Structures are given as structure tokens and as C-alpha cells.
Image (cartoon, rainbow, N blue to C red; front, side, top):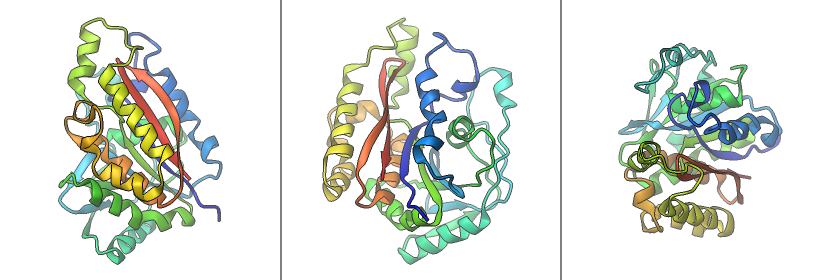
Amino acid sequence: MSRLPTLFIPHGGGPCFFMEWDPPDTWDRMAAYLRAIPADVGVPPKALVAISGHWEEKVATIQNNPAPPLLYDYYGFPESTYRIGYPAPGAPEVSARVAELLGAAGIAWKYDRERGFDHGVFIPLKVAFPRADVPIVQVSLLASMDPAEHIRLGRALAPLRDEGVLIVGSGMSYHNMRTLMGSMRGGADGRIADPASQRFDDWLKEVLTGTAPQARADALAAWERAPGARDAHPREEHLLPLHVAVGAAVADPGRRTLKDVVMGAAESAFRFG
């Protein structure tokens, strides 16, 4: 079986791909990137393990539900967006394998048999895998927000890549809502990147695509020192899915698979392996 890559993907703003926006093409490039993921991966995955910026727990928590519902955890959007469907199944056997790997790595874990897919999972994956025929297991972030622990979490999951499982970190490479919403209200050109967002995006590209694996991990563990870091992420929950994807990459090289500017911010996606 071919080894699958790991991905860090952007999930956009709320249900952005399934509603009208102004300007109308705001999310078009990101949506086109998401639709191209299956072809880029090449091998149909037997399941996905997804880590979203919208689920945090004290210990690593593994969704273990054969038919997860959806969590419409966004607010103030058109009524139609609360009727979006995505009936992707869960995969209890993959959940058990995740638990086995975390336990072997000495990482505390628990199951959650009730929680559904949050919008950081079902919104981008509905674009990427619209038939909803690939089982999905969501794994939480750690409430500690410790970057090194999220890299360690990813490394524990790495064997899944040889077992037909695609590991997907879903977040945003830039997630300062004050700046993003200010760009909309101020009538700024949303296709011109805020300088601070561009500095952080440049740093990400250099670290993720141009450094050796250990240096890459060390730099991500100290990401707060990067240019524009706290402007890009006042709180890091949307960045840490990247750390999991990088941890699961182990020594595989990275490449940037999307460079976009949305609502005045540089946004990127990355593939490892």
C-alpha cells in the first residue's frame, strides 16, 4: 500500500463555500484547491483522520461514532447553511487504531461517542470529497495549546499513513478575525495581503518547505517567535492542526499547495510527503 501524505488545509470562514459572498469570487481559489485534493493525493484513502481548529479537550479525544452528526458551530449565516448535509460515516476501527497508537506513544486519550463533525471538518471535506463516502474520524486538539505536544501527537499517528489513512489538519494559516473583519468593513482591497500576514506566510513557507525535518519541528515548536506570529494568530487553535500534520510527516518534505489572499490576508495550504 502506498504511503499517503499529510495535509494542512484551510477551511475558510464558516460555511463560506456554500453561500453567496461579496465579492463573489472571494473563496473561489480556495474551493478549487479543496476540490483538487483527491487528484493531488492520487490514492483513494480508506479513511480520513481530521484535526480541526474547532475542537479542544484536556486530553487527546477520539471521535468514536459510526454515524457522526454535524455541528453547525458558526453564527449569523444564512438559514440555508444550517441545512447543509454531509453524511460521511465514522470509522470505529480507525478510532481504535488511533487509540492504540496514542497509548503506545504514552499520550493520554479518551473516546467521544456523541460529538459530531464541526465545520472545520464537514465544510472543507464536503468540497474535497463531495460524495461523503470516505469514513472520517476527528481527533481533538489539546487544550494546553502546547505546540511541541501537537507535533508529538502527529508523530504518534504517522503509522496510519501506511495503512491507507489520510491525515488532515484543518485550520487557517492566518486567523486574526479582527483584521479580517476590518478589511471587509473598511472596504479595503481583499486581494492585497496585510503586510503582517505576508511576513508570517513567508516564514511558514521557508520553514515548511526549505528546512530539515528537525529544524522544521523546532521552528514550529517556537512559532511565536516568527515575524507577525501573534498578529496572524492571537490564539493558536487554527495553527496547531498544522503541527499535527507536520508531526505525522516525520521526515517527509513539505511543499506549498495553495497561496491565496482572502479578505486581506495571505492564506496557504501545505502537503508533506
